[in-house]
Image 1 (cartoon, rainbow, N blue to C red):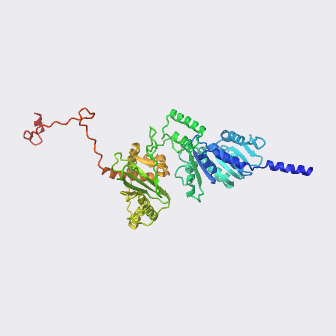
Image 2 (cartoon, rainbow, N blue to C red; image 1 turned 90 degrees about the vertical axis):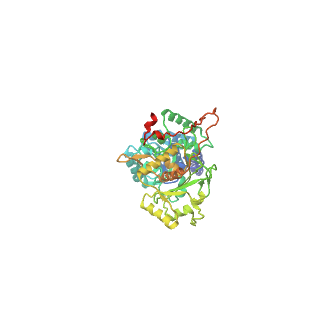
Image 3 (cartoon, rainbow, N blue to C red; image 1 turned 135 degrees about the horizontal axis):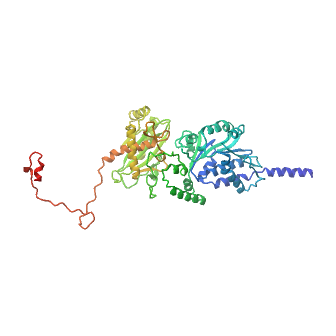
Length: 537
């Protein structure tokens, strides 16, 4: 009997440690996430960044990462860092308990909660989650010497830079065996560690959606979403809670009178960086006030380069290729088209291409194809169907000037240099903005150009002049400014459409009676040289 009792006790202990059903629980948790959250939860990068608008579910996404790590890694040590300990408790302590309860875990048996240390521990595999505040250096020092499998830092824009750097590089980084993520909404100040890793065009991160293009990436993996994008991503299976919250947000936005370019709306709701004194460089609007598509278009894309298919309304298209050369920064190549027969003079954006480390030869291949046949080009010019009416490039630096010279001398591709100078560029931007306001520029949806038009902000120089904020990518936006200026030359050469004939029926609105003609009379004999007073008697 003693042997049987020993076997029963062994079986009981094995049953107590059985976690074979936990993988199904993990799948259940992940499936409950909306697609934006799910991408964040399943990201295996060492460093992960989440820039999320209010109501987007960032805290829930972080909590799912913690619970997933605890359920799949025996002895896992997870750490959540908030601004203060009380803030940490308010954010995820109750949600963690509710999540485990929903999965069938019994408090005190399957999971033990220590209220004094804010630590949750799974009894079957020893995995734990601890919540701490970053306001007490002594608490952060106590984190030294421990191995961490999952670390999350919430409201990253609110933490002092020095503290974040110290926590990541000295306290946690040396003993991190899993992932560390920074998550939060955008802050007021466009500076700091969180800003540098989460802003568009950051060299410290790459968007999650572009991960396949960076197989050896060692920097941060960037996720960015808002409540609106989460709703769009679940259009096939709407989530009532999200729709309810979104409706409430729209009421609040209306009550506060927040326009689309209001910095508070952009930060809190749209997951975009915007300082309180933000003034966008470009007047780009996806929709107008009536809710109609205005500056964005999403046509069919054709061919290997996925060039936009133009409307079949016109056939006499004028094409411009605009380029902003770079090397460490990307080289941007954009294609724009307009039709002389179009009375609205609408400009259509057909292609947006950006890539780093391009020199003259690969650019020539991009433009006319690897066989370099001028009479039968492939590449971008082949996709257009004919040579463009003109090409223009920004010759901002000597390397760009050398590039343009090589393209013409070696490959026979002439690209006109754009005029330079701050005043010229400001004027070019003003022309673009006029067309944007009137809806005469249509920009490809989700292109780099669209992202730049949405994000670029003015700053003030030391002398008080308005300048673009440094560090913001503007390569394709510059292509639009210079390309639009070049297109103006072709638009000016186009005769305006004839005015409609005036109605001939006197009863019709707009009828203008003809001028009565009298026999001509010559009064020259009444005047001497310039003596017009004679006519007045």
